Length: 341
Image: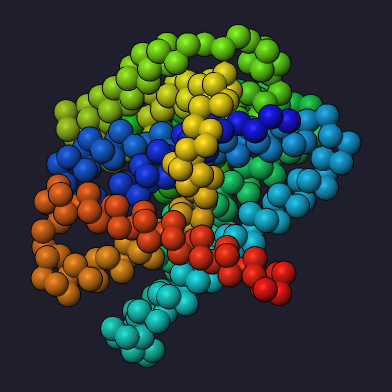
């Protein structure tokens, strides 16, 4: 199977977008209303890429159950390892600030409910881990429907759930649903993972002729402009609550994946493609470096300059760079231990 370099190429921009979302303050005009809405393609693309690559591995594979088990176990190992790390990090932070016998520690422990830890990926400072556990649940449901040969039904069902989930976010003022959070596997992860899987199984997309990149550039600007406009319209014009994903995000993700399927050699040999291949590692660790950067900025007395565009861009660059370097160091150390070097 020929490697799809375009996926890792897009992943670089996706993980950079995630870092931008998390480093810019929520009341920063440019960061919150423009960069934030612009960057909302990132996590849906990660889900779709995972579903696509998973599909390529198990479709027509007589040992698909073995690969499924191996894949889910790998995801869960990543999730619980980093979950434990952030729990210990949080407890240490509380101890330094308040002491072990503070009410804050009790409240923290009370928030570590089974539902938060095993489904929503919430309760710790590692809030980004919701994606990892949602991916595990999404892949499990996806494989179940694959074995039942009901992928098309799942695609329709998950699309409906995704649309319902939007009314738990920016569209809540039009139709409010009685669900606290729709940032989870059921309302977000399942649809985008399924659509990625469907691209892997739909032969017309694999066999169709290559489309010129300039055509994708047109749709690139069109769909991104739609997503940006949709988010801005909801929040600034209608004063709706912040939405993480939009109707246009669906079209944008589909377009991006058509690009990766039909232009698989894009990014081959490029450094950013290599970095994109480590997107999950950067994703899991970058929140730690956001805290470290914030601590350093406050120590130097520039923590109150959070609305300075240049400072925020430097912050995002530092977080991204330190996360990538640290993740590669961890992988290097693991490799040396494995081979006894």
